[in-house]
Each structure stands twice: as structure tokens, then as C-alpha cells.
Length: 474
Ligand code: HEC
Ligand code: HEC
Image (cartoon, rainbow, N blue to C red; front, side, top):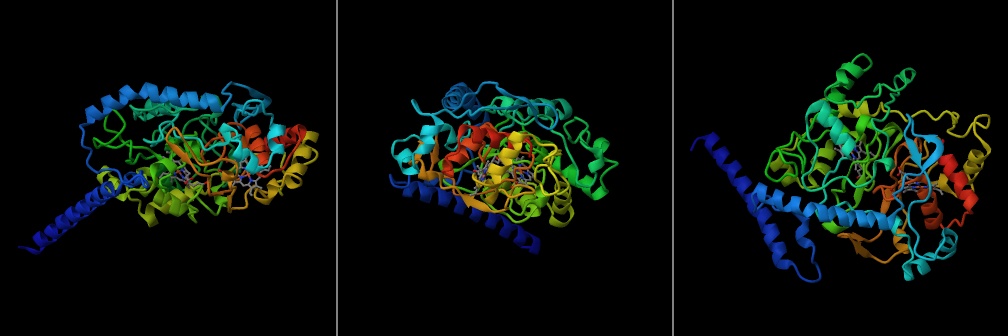
């Protein structure tokens, strides 16, 4: 045997060994499945799908309507989904901001009565508002990336690339989502204002829009951020969720214009499947002032997150499926750094009422906003975790929400408490609904009601409104 032949033999032997090991793990887990550890097999997904593509697709298409109806029922139980905009308040361009507390209360309760109870009583009597519980993925056992309809339509128009899944649609109504396309601000060119010129930045137009204002390295970073790469649901194998073999997804398919369009998927880093958190795409505006990345993962640099988003999150944290479906491994020195450099330029939107300390200018703010600020930095204690000027302490905190409810499974999602989650910055927060890492809260009014309960603040109705008024100008 030649040396090359021996090497090939060793490579094939190695691959075979790896696959055998993989199946071994699955079978061993099947055998070990008992009543005590029922979900163990879900740690790994089979590499070879035993059914043909069209069989899987037909079955899932037939099941789609019922799954979506059940999920819509859950959303209606959790929330008032109506269109109730706040008078005279818009996101950075012009989309109305939704107001009012949307999470439903248990029968016969008011928010005042509820917040007068202690956590143990709420837990014992099962009175924690259903909309404050973790939000399940529209099909939690299946999971995977889901994009809002308006984004799918725009990408189809610009690139003829289809982000439709045959088995599932995005769930939350458009009026609860960020405006689209969002504005894009650069720390290096504050004089220009929005550099996206009202367009969705894609492969089709990034040169034309950003060519004159970025250096070639940053521009190459943008090119990679708008380049489609293979992913679990969108790829070219039979194990995909698009009708035709897919060209993949881009970073900006979720982080639209470096912000967010509220696309969702499941956290890749938790097992078994039913305890995985739903994730709402965070904005990348202001990542330059942040020190922790990912709601739970606490990666330390934008470079690390950029590198591992594709290896980890794109394939549910499964490197073997990633290899099979065609993972695009980014090269650290010439690609990751370029992408990160551009992401670090994405600025928060303007907040005309804030001064250099990130506090309200009393000449520009109204009385209610000033009262809200005083509460935020005083009685309500928000500033302990959200200090000015950017309203984040760059740490993780465990809110111990499980103090308020017993573990329960809803729509295939086992809710056991959230664990430590990073404090997201609140600068520009009115532009980034829905709220919390999983998007469970639809309005800023909900977030104030949520923290009032969790932190046991016992704020009055008027104080809560003052706090919301303050959040709206950050
Ligand atoms: C399916 C939509 C989706 C796609 C596609 C996507 N992301 Fe994300 N991104 C998310 C979600 C959701 C999170 C939050 C992850 C978590 O909480 O662990 C996130 C987090 C991040 C963060 C950390 C932000 C923070 O505030 O902690 C960075 C940086 C990031 N993504 C960059 C990228 C890059 C670069 C790409 C392309 C390689 C990309 N993302 C592709 C949805 C997406
Ligand atoms: C003990 C620390 C802590 C305190 C105190 C605190 N927060 Fe937070 N805040 C967090 C963490 C952690 C998150 C992220 C939680 C999650 O995603 O599940 C968060 C998230 C938020 C969000 C949503 C951010 C987003 O991007 O989705 C808002 C709004 C918010 N907090 C407002 C407040 C207000 C108003 C107060 C005071 C009444 C407050 N917080 C007090 C830690 C804190």
C-alpha cells in the first residue's frame, strides 16, 4: 500500500469509527432509557434519517396546521395580542410601540393583589401569570430557526433565496416585532445617521450602501455577515426543512441591519430537548460596550461568538451533524476578525433626551420621565443591574423565577427556572421587542410588571407608568 493509500485508509477507518461510536452512543442510550431518564436519547439526533425526504415533508406538512393552532391557542391564553400602540411613541424610524401589560392574570386577581403575595404563596397557589413563564418555541420538540414573514419576503425579492420552512411558520404578530428594516448607525460616522438608507442590507446592495464609508476589511466583514451558510434546517441534504435544497442563512437574516427582526430558535447549549430555552435574537447595536455574549453562554468576545455561532448554534451544538450538512468554518485571522470589527461599529440609536452620563437632561425630559428616572435609580433598584450610561452591568444574574412556580411542562417545554442570564443593555430598548432572552414579554409595561413582582418591589400603578415612560426614552 502506498503512503497516500494508507493515509486514506486511516481517514476512512477513523470516520467509520466515529460513526460507529455515534450509533453506539444512540443505541446505548436507547438501551439505558428507563422511566427515570426518559429524554436521554434526545441528546443526539440520528445522522442518517431513516425516512425519505418526501415522506418526512409530507408528514410534517400534514401536521403543520394543528401544531400552529395549538401554539396560537397558547399565545392567546398567555397574552392580549391586540394592537394597542402607545400614543405618540414610535421606534427609531416610525413603527408604533405597543403599550399596556399583555400578560394575562389568573382569574379574580389584580396586579396589586398579586404583588402583595410572597413568592411561596404564588407558587403554592399556582398564581404566577402564564405570560411570565418561559415562552415555548412554536414547535418545541422540533425547534430550529424561524424567520418572520416580512423578512422571508424581502430576502426572496432581493436574493431569490427562500427562508420558508415547510413544517412551521413564525408565531408572534408583526406589531410586537422590531421595525423592518431597522435603521443602522455606525460609531465611526455619527454624522451620517442611518447608513442603511431605509433598505435591508444584503448581498445585493452592501457594496452600494456601505462601499464609501467602510474600509476594505470592514466591508469584507459585512460581506461575510450577509453571506448564506449551511444550517440545521436550511441546507442541501435530505435532512432539512425547506422544500428545495437551501443556500443557507446569513447572520443578518436574524440580526437584520445589525439589529434584530426577532427571529427565533432554541439554545444549542442545553439538553435534553425539552429544557432548551427559546431564544429571541438580540440586537447587535452596542455590542462594543458589552463584555458577555449569549444569554447563558457568557462567551467573552464578539470574535468568539462569531466563530462559534455557526459551529454551535447553527447545528444545535452537534458537530457531527454540522459536518454532514456542510458547516462553514470561519478562519479566525482573516474572516472572524473582519466580521467582529464591523459588528463593533454598530451603534445604539440616538436618545436625544440623555446627556453624556446617560441620564435625562432636565431641560428636555418631562416630569413623568424624571419621576421614572428617580424610581429606576432609587426605590425600584433597576440601576443595580442596569447602571447608566448604557444600562447594563455586563454581568449575569439569576432571578430565581422558580421561586414563583413549580416545574411544569407546557407544549413540550419543561420549565424549571431560567438560571443566570446576562443583563441586556436597556439603551434603545423600545426598538427591541419582544423582551427577555426568550421574548416572553411583549411590551415594556410587561417588563415593569415582571420586575415589580420578581424583585418584590410593590410599586404603585402610577410608579409603574413612570418607569415605563423612562424606559421609552432610553
Ligand atoms: C436564527 C437567527 C440567528 C442567526 C442566523 C445568527 N444569530 Fe447571532 N444570535 C441569535 C440569538 C438568538 C442570539 C442569542 C444567543 C444566546 O442567548 O445564547 C444571538 C447572539 C449573537 C451575539 C451575542 C449578542 C449578545 O448580546 O449576547 C453575537 C455577537 C451574534 N449573535 C453574532 C452572530 C453572527 C456573527 C452570526 C452569523 C455567523 C449570527 N449571529 C447569526 C440569533 C441568530
Ligand atoms: C438583579 C438584577 C436585575 C435587576 C435589579 C433588574 N434587572 Fe432588568 N434584567 C436583568 C436580567 C438578568 C435581564 C435578562 C433576563 C432574561 O433575559 O431572562 C433583564 C432584562 C430586562 C429587560 C429586557 C431586556 C431585553 O433586551 O429584553 C428590561 C426592559 C429590564 N430588564 C428592565 C428592568 C427594570 C425596569 C428594572 C427595575 C424595575 C430591572 N430591569 C431590574 C437583571 C436585572
